[in-house]
Image 1 (cartoon, one colour):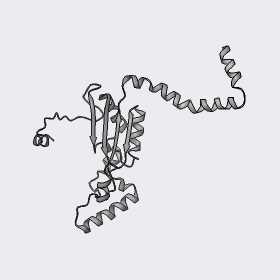
Image 2 (cartoon, one colour):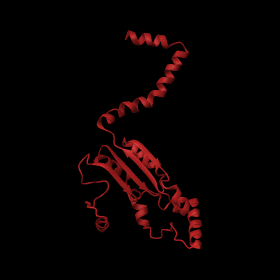
Image 3 (cartoon, rainbow, N blue to C red):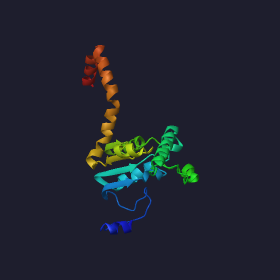
Image 4 (cartoon, one colour):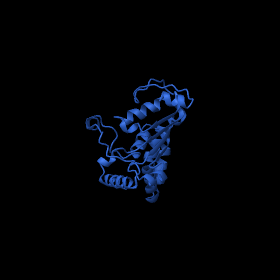
Length: 207
């Protein structure tokens, strides 16, 4: 990475640490970008929670990844992969998919990376739970490219924003009213329909 940065004339600060225990104070960054990392993480929720901590208010998180190794768990994906490999080999081009014989099964089964999870929908649910805003999930970021190569694991993108303190302070109120709005409106409609609305309003005013 240092060599690549030097060749491009860039001066970068490279650090090695765990993705879910970052050595940075709160509200440090305006932007966090991750590419083909999250699928390897044992606990994606803890990672997103930590990334949210180090983001400044209105800071953005952008994640690129793919459902790697899905061919081991989805027979239709495996069939597409085999067909694409055969076609590309016959054409004399290098396959973009492979059988991934180098998978360390102990790592897969015991450390539980994010394989076989419905992503990016899963990511979106975690980000909602962590109270990110402006969440966008795109399942195929480069549709033209992957129509040509026929890969069985197209790249997806997830983007989200950390709210300001004022915006976050309204979340509990909004979540509460959004949750009960249907119930309250249905009860009001029922009381109007059965004629008990006026009696209810009078009882409230008396107390």
